[in-house]
Image (cartoon, rainbow, N blue to C red; front, side, top):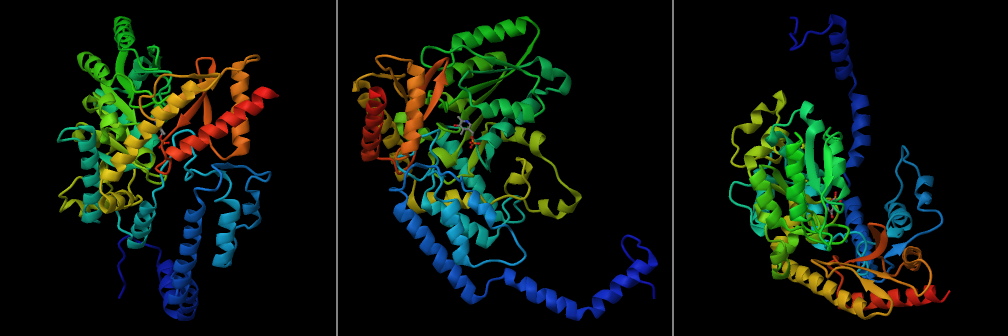
Length: 503
Ligand SMILES: *Cc1c(COP(=O)(O)O)cnc(C)c1O
């Protein structure tokens, strides 16, 4: 009898296929034997546990004492002399390559003297969460697939909503980082505002000179590269001037443009300053604009009393980005988006394929796949849930208060140092300053200073520019940074200044 197929195939093709698979037991046995090495034997598994554990322990034993920055002449090129090949190499060799070419060159973001950019986290507990997530292999995109994983993610979203003061009815998702979360926010805001392609040239976005560059990048990725970006004037402390904002919006409206979005910063990357969020919120409301807050660096400071006050007004925004991989001290790869009205996420991110029809039958919780760009995704919730459950929130609160007090301490000590000019008093945990030499160009001096500090490597600080002035930054954000590390870093800084000023 002729066998029927779902989709008709040519007669001979069908016969060939059937014959081949039935007579090819030998081939299958061979392929099975080879592919079975994808599953480690008991012995191999034990070796994997033992040796990676030893590697990890050694890394943790040394992470505080290894320099914050290391650069070599070959810039890790050695890695490429061992290409990907048909046959594998031993675990010892693999770990040696990781040690030689990856884990000991560049920035050591685990160092307590890593004070550059925005320090990331890397609490060890998260690594175990990642490990268990990968071992368990739960799919966290859709409720039906793993109710537990989805409940966990949504529980963390609700916890963060509580931390920042968002109301019931808000939603969000865990992203890979702040850039993607900002991109999502912009697209959600665009759809909520009903903007269409023809409107983009007239659509106006308000931000400041210090708004993170990923916002501009997101606009371009969103196809809105032609929209109008207003860099609103700042007060003397690098914060958006509410007065200037109001005037700029009025002028834009009067000239027939389409004001649409205000991006406020809850802690700029550049100087750590917080925009007047409450004032901006009321301007956004009265002008019917979307108010987005980029809190990738600063929003988690709402966990501690010292941060909460200054972030006042953040909870009045329409959307908000946080980066657990910064100020919740998680390893790289954890961002979050919160949206005040959860319902607005779907129009921008919803979508289902025909192959997903079995999935919606028993949804008790919103599925991340329907409110975010990703379908299959890393089970990110576990790396955040595990440390929060294990340690409780208290040590995170304490660490954030500690960072704020350390920044104030560093500011005060810098302020007493000869030749140092400090920037504004820190809103959160970034201190800006510069050294003004008795003779010569101050910008040039500070550029050289940062180069010399990098060459030394014991402490890692970066520079930036405010207007045409080169300033140094000290970004205090690692969970490992404590008083002694700030003292050591300031001592190294002073010595480097002395050496440079004498030559
Ligand atoms: C780090 C940062 C971003 C970008 O987030 P990523 O996680 O690096 O993608 C955006 N905004 C601010 C204020 C940041 O500090």
